[in-house]
Image (cartoon, one colour):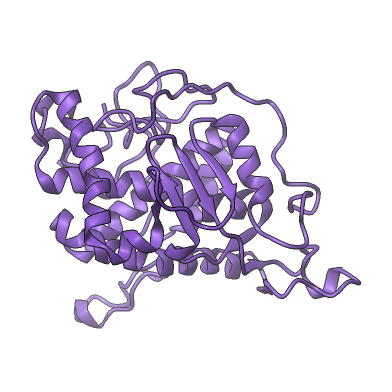
Length: 335
């Protein structure tokens, strides 16, 4: 079963469990073993981080992630290159850099299945394994600190071999009661803090920040994945949802993660404003370009192979091994 469809648990103990190091093509890091932490999240009574709270979004949340998921290490630093590092700016600007990332997953797929992956399948897996951890740079500060970093591909770099990410913190969105907001501090607010009026606006800001970041990424992957924009955004939605869902489970807050992700990607304006209105004239869902709905179902029980989530996209792993079809694959759940 693929990591795309399985359920997060507080303790991840081996390759094959859901997370950044697993999936159809095998482990992305040499090992994937974490110990469950019983520490509370970085949210305090005001819902904001306590370390460096007035200057940046993310450092405290990334430290918490490192405590529960050592296989994925995030450092706040300028983007790096060389020695296995891939800068986000290179990924979207240099096709050769993108193809090298994809070849990493192609080699793992060959080792795992004993047969070459189709080039588009390897590219799809590469896209998932890029978006899954990078999306956490946005969603985890929102989940733990109620701050949304405003990042561009040029602000990040990753090294797949070691499970490392660097991120250059900059501007961020926050709520009026955030210590960085002008109304809650006597000191001049950091120039990077941008206040939004409420939780709904913050969620909209998160979707917008993710969409702005991912648009050039999906444009770069599209010729390799060979799928249209709608499918690519479905793949991105799956990676964003599954990343925070998994991290929430490790943090002991799986149910809150499910609830907040369901609200974040709620269909909103469904487009069904009237039975006679032409489809092309209907408004897009509020979560566009992401696929509406986080896909969660009632939790599985009794050792059932049914997934707790119906994916919006298919990873096509069955093309390498027919019996590897994910339980949450839309090809299964939608017949």
